[in-house]
Amino acid sequence: MMIGNQKRDVKKYFFMLPNAVFELGLHVYELAIYAYLLRIEDRRTWQCVVSYPTIADKLGISVNTVAKYVGLLEEHGLIATERTDVITRDGLRRNGCLRYTILPIKNAIDRFHERQLSALEQAAAQQRAEKSGVEFVPPDKEQSA
Image (tube, rainbow, N blue to C red):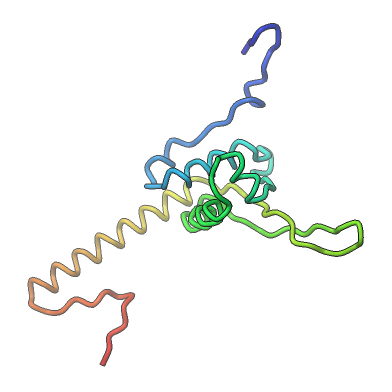
C-alpha cells in the first residue's frame, strides 16, 4: 500500500479482527478492549504487556471499566492474563502490568454455544416442570428445607 512517497507494510499498520467476535454478544467496551489488545499484540506470540491506565487512556474509558471488561473477556475465553513483576532500581520487586495472551477465537465460540445450549436446556426443563405442575428448581440453586 502506498501513502504519499512511503510504502506501508500492511502487516505492520493493520490488524484483523475475527468476524465471530460480533456474534458473541460482547459489550461495546469488551469489543474495544479486545480490538486494542489485538492491535498491540506480538503476532508471533499472541501476547502483549500493557497497563490498565494505558488501555483506559487509549480508549477514553476509566481504569475500573477496563478492569471489569478485561475480567469478562477472560470469562468469555478470548484472553488469558498473568501478572508480571518489575525489579526497581532499589532492587525491590513490584507488581508490573498484566501480560495478555490472545486465545484462539474457537474457544470463545465453543463457550458461547455451550452457554446457549445450557440456557435452552434449562428453559425446556422449566417448561416441562410447569406443564406437570411441579415447582422448577434450577440445578445451580440449592433447595431449602
